[in-house]
Length: 266
Image (cartoon, rainbow, N blue to C red; front, side, top):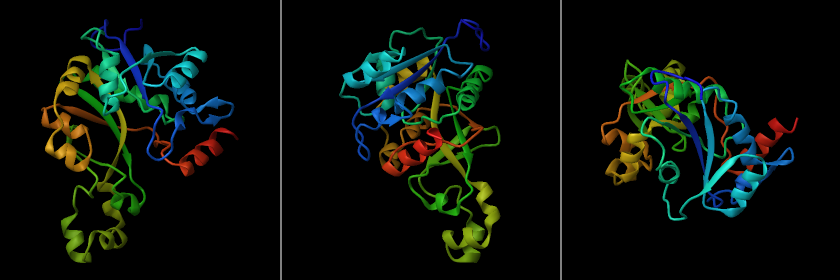
């Protein structure tokens, strides 16, 4: 095992939660891309992260398990009753050492950059006060600020998360007052775009905090915004937010799939 950070015995495990069912694109993880299932492309890119010691798929479906193992990757079966990928990950790593760092990588990101994973892991390796780490990226389109499917991240001056929201936060009050609304403000004052950051859904946890998080009940804010990272903030977690070297390309719809396929099957 390589020595990655403060504690030379820390092992970094990238866990990819993988459900077969998907509300918008059923069976998407097994859709073909350049002759291989979509999830395999994700795993191959995760395996290229230099700060990851082990890649593990946590699934509730035998089809996914078989495809993953056929390509030489490690996978475990987990309960079908989990409400979130984080809960599935917590089951998969329950027996791992408390010194471990667990990385939650979404299975539907076949273009994820290994450098992004390394950046998130690195935030925990160098910051002893952080319980979790995640990343964000620039927002370049005004429509993304208004889109509730694009989660906005607010960080303090030291790079720690203050809040995450589907709403336009932080709210540019003066620009909105001058323009008459947030949409008008974004059109009239393009510079305010720089105040918004898109949250990219990759997390690294210290193992003890992951256990604490998975055992805690959802909070009112979490259920309101439908963002489980708000539970972590309610528990008092210090979440370091680093810049994503490149943008994310998740596959949620058939249009997303076609765009990713065009990028891979060139």
